Amino acid sequence: MPLLRKFIWPAFLVLIFLLSTGLISYTWWLFQIERGNRALRRGEGRTATEIYQSAEAFLGRVPWLAHLFRSDYQKLIFNQVGILYALGRDDEVMDKLDQATGRAPFLAESGEYSFWTGNVLVRRAIQSKDPEESLEALKGALSEYQKGLAAEPDDWDLKYNYELVRQILSQKELDKKKEGERVKSILEKMRPTVEPSRQELPPEKRG
Image (tube, rainbow, N blue to C red):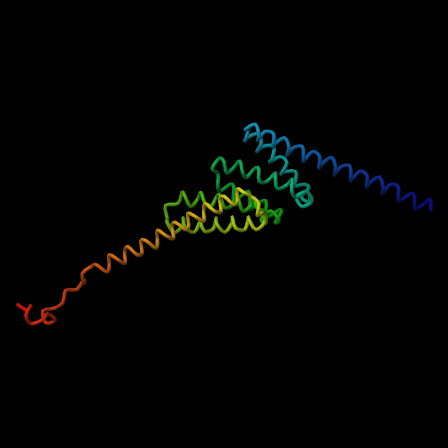
């Protein structure tokens, strides 16, 4: 029994130490996120980004935190994404989302992931000079918003953007149909492109 106590006590102390270290690390991590949030609320986007990046770098050493504290990690990632989007850095938005989902795949199933991905696609559609490319981007955005609403049906931002893009696509489809009908009407009114030969003309009209 004394021998058992000899091993149990050190193990207990090690366990207490590990738990205390983990708690301190988690508390520091949350504090960093909150510091970033406060900076963001003050409109200090650059400062907030630096703080968020510091908190995210910490996850490289303690990656399990992302899975254990999903909600906090989502705020950390999507707040950064929001800043990048506001600055018009769409490629960096997509890179950040790819990196984050590589570490924590569950993020791709969230409404916010679909929201920001859809927003980038809409902006690409607006900026594109290629009609087909623009149309495909809008369809991709609609699909993302739809996926996001399946995860978070009460998200009004997702609902608004979904309805907006759906209306744009409906209008484009209507315009395309009208254009097709207009072209068909013109073709029907056109004279034949090949003039009939004299042999095909009735006798009274031959020269």
